[in-house]
Image (cartoon, rainbow, N blue to C red; front, side, top):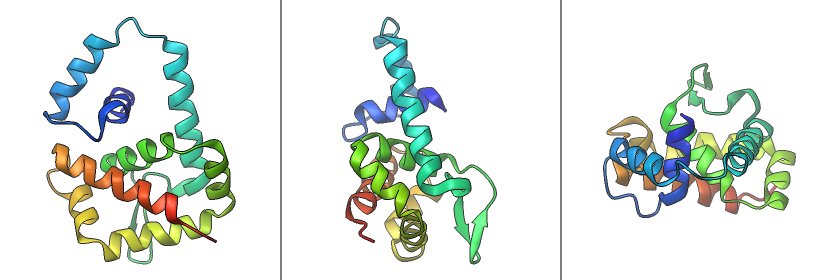
Length: 144
């Protein structure tokens, strides 16, 4: 999941190959990269997801509640989207987590493209771009 995060985070707007090939390429290109910096990016993103979605980070809204299971495509969307935001925005979202949860439910219920991107052919690069961009747009546009 860590390698998947960095592969998508680095190039999500231009991914053109299968995610498995892109991950191999990422490993080859970054084998000598500063691991401390990578650790900081990953930890910051993971903490942001926890602060914003709480116990429902990476979970799918279902039947008026939340499915208590990590959903990998949602992990992609949330982790990469928060990694693109500045600290001020992350703090705002953490303080308004109820609004984020409500908007996450709406994204699932009202956006057929998003739903498809997290439930069908989830390794497809178009699906990855769709879910990351829609999650990012949602987070940027939330106002309490």
